[in-house]
Image 1: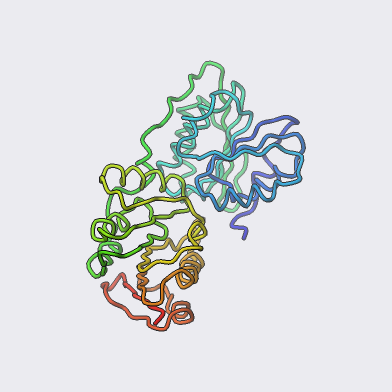
Image 2: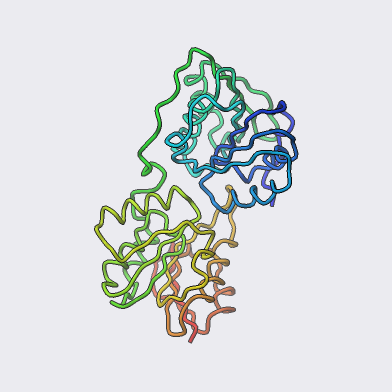
Length: 335
């Protein structure tokens, strides 16, 4: 699925043997253009493991060198001053902290004379990003304005110091319990022996709550974001709980060979800025595959999101068990 025209494809010019760093923007169509080049090193600093995997598969049998690293802790594991071109699309950044981090990673990773290209719309913060680039790099240029989208560019000057590595991973996840999750916690039934799955765990609020109650059971938390996995793992470590594990996973792929008594999810309903039912509907199908016959599946949804058709297609019993005018909590069972 293509979400935007490829302004970068016309504005970013690569030379043979260039090293190209993609900043948490693996789904951008520009990446597919890079894959078609020869003698290029393509490095994804990408926290979405599903997006990174698609690029990796596309790069097989191509004449490029492909590498994948986590975006949120890139500077902790890579040398500075090694990259010729860095690229970021604001569409794929979940919030301002991710954008700022991307700029800092670029300043750290680019060699003197290296170029950072950023694309995005005004409503995604391209103007404030340009100001930050001017402050950080001492220069910024607008290369293209088309249909509300811009491409801006900055060059790393030789006198610029490298940025210090960012070590606080918690800036990439919300530290607040959202209202939908709060409603779920108020009605969620947890048994002491439950084998439970928190599907799309984020910072791990749901999984940790279940682990405290399922004292004779075990909780698995999974998320497609490497940053979320690290945040959840830190939360587990700080909690002192020993009946929890956290895994990176594209949906439930990492646990499709297991079965659970309880599955909970508060799925995202935006993908690259576009509202979608696809993520939740996939979670529903996968939950039906791995839920035990007498198990319970709980889903949080904004009231306007119509998941009932998909739920009724895969579960025998579907009922609303909580919520308010804005949210609904649905419980589904196979029997």
